Length: 246
Image (cartoon, rainbow, N blue to C red; front, side):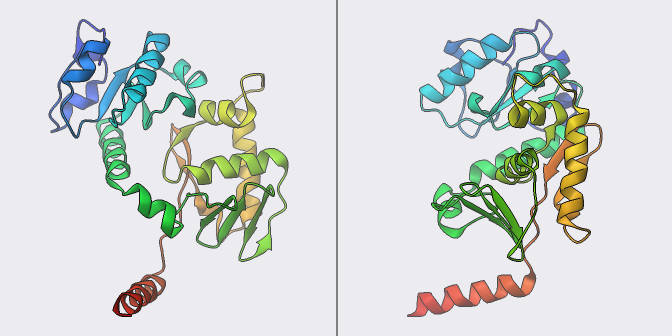
């Protein structure tokens, strides 16, 4: 969706990929024209207010279409999770980045919601406020985190930063996004603050686990959940099989 007279300039990399692209004007009438299994790229480069309104209308109408906002660097200071978007991308993103974001959004959209809630999947908070990711446990109610059952001594903002990243596994956030979501609108410091806290977090996670917080060059940071050990996965499959037989 875009107001641009030349849609090819909105996200040039998209034209280099093999996906079928349909251009729609940014108005409510276009919402009924979207086919099923669509990922909506919404041009928010020049009119964030209209983009935000459309995001709200899409969710209010009951549509489950995932929305990816196309932004300029400055737009990251305004957008937050309350917009109900699946992801964001800068207009100058490379074809590889656009393809990667499309794949991740598509995979998240196809994952059964009930499965995530019932199995304790990475990044999902249970009723006790606990988020488990491998050996890492974040207690959102107690404001504590632990590795292998041993508490990690975190300052308040370090905990908030870790919690936010763990709640969105695999999703890349710019420094500006993290600054807004963790420190808030009224914080006047620079994005260097994020780098400092990321370094402290990695140091406290230790050499074995510092890789859980990944760096995406020229973009920002993400939480990389540990891959399940093959033996653990086999044990779980066997357990499920036994319970099914009984």
